[in-house]
Amino acid sequence: MEPFPPLPEIVGVLRAGRALLGFRQEELAARAGVSRQTIARIEASGKGVPYETFEKVKRALEKEGVVFIDSEAERGPGVAIRRPRKSQAKVQGLTRE
Image (tube, rainbow, N blue to C red; front, side, top):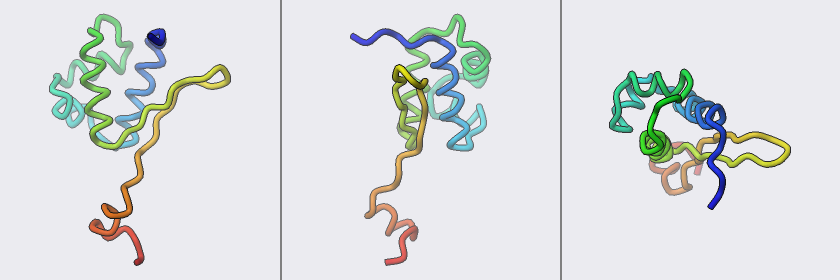
């Protein structure tokens, strides 16, 4: 079992994931099944928020395409957006083929 990352790192990547998607706190809250106030508490410090709530928010972000990148010795954690599969890109008109 991997050690639980420090709270500031968790807060940072969840906030960054929301920013990458361009979601307001209300939008993320609705997708995660939590209140907007809970998202605000997470982004402020995360203190007192149950682990299960962090997981709900993380799963909601992942469902929307956010990829969480683990930290390593020389750098902290990060986030990225999953690229659409080629078949999805064609349907969405994102390719020139």
